[in-house]
Image 1 (tube, rainbow, N blue to C red):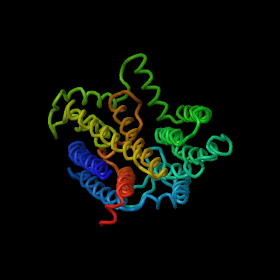
Image 2 (image 1 turned 120 degrees about the vertical axis):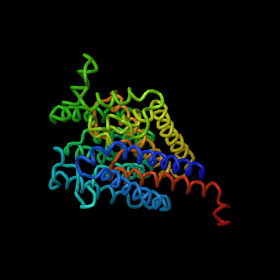
Image 3 (image 1 turned 45 degrees about the vertical axis):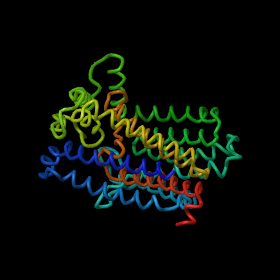
Image 4 (image 1 turned 45 degrees about the horizontal axis):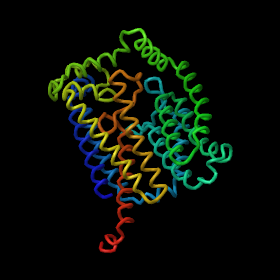
Length: 370
C-alpha cells in the first residue's frame, strides 16, 4: 500500500510539473496583453501549486478518521457558504460562484463536492442497515446531495451540479444503495437540470450549439473549434513547447479549461496519450487503495476521491475534443486554477493517508519497529 501511495504522489507531481510548463506557455501572451507582465498568471499558478503540494502533504499525514468525525460539520459549513454566494457574493461572468478572499477567489462548490463525498462515505457505513429502505434510508441520505446540487445549480453552475449528483449516486451504489432507488431519484434531477439548462442563456447556447453541430455539422462554438484546430495541428510529436499558435489569443481560456488543446498542439498525440496514461495510472492506484483498505469508511472515501478526479479529467478532455458541450471545468493538476487546485490536492492527500494507514494495519510489525 505504501508503494501505491508513492505512485499516486509522484503521478500527481508529474502532472503538476507538466501543468506548470503548459500554463507558462498558454498564458504568456494573454498575461502580456492583459497585465503587461508575461509571467503574471504563471507566477500566480506557481504559488497555488506550491500551496496545493503543501496541503496535500499535510493531509497525507492527518488520520482519515478525523474527517469522519467532523463530516457533518464540514458539509453544513460548505452549504452555508454556497447559500452565501447566492445571497451576497458578487457576480463574476454572470454567475455568483465565488467569494473574494483578497489573495484568491474561493469557490465553495469545490469544498462542497469534497465535503459531500466525505459525509456520504461516513453515512453509507453508519446507516448501511437502513439503506435498503427508500424513504427512511436512501432518501434521507440523498437529501444532502439534493441540497448541495440545487444550491450549485442556482449559482448557476450546471456542470458542477450534474457531476456532483452523478458522483454521489455512483458512491451510493457502491455503498449498497439499490439501483431502482437510484433510478427513481435520478429522473426528477434530470428534468430539473434540463429545465435549468434551458432557462440560463449561456447553458442553453452551449447545449443547443453542441447538438446542432452533432446532428447538422458545422462549428460547435469558437472555443471548441479553436481547441480542435490546436489538437489537430499537433501531429504525432507536436510543434514543441512554447510554439503553440492557439495561445496567441486565438483560443480563449487556453491556460484553463482548454489547456488539453495546448498540450495536444505542443506535445502532439504522444504527449496527449502520456497524460491519459498518467490519469489511468492514478485511477488504477486509487481503485487498488480503495479495494485494499480495511476500514469501510476509508474504502468508500478512496473510491469517491478517485472517481471524482477521473470524472473531471474525462469531462475536461472530452470538451476539448468536441465530444461534450463546454462545461467550464478545469483539467485536474494541469489547468490554471485556484481553489480547485487546493481541494483536489487535499483530496489526494486523503487518498495517500488511507493508503499509508491501511499499510500499517496490514503490517503492524512495521509500526512496532518504528
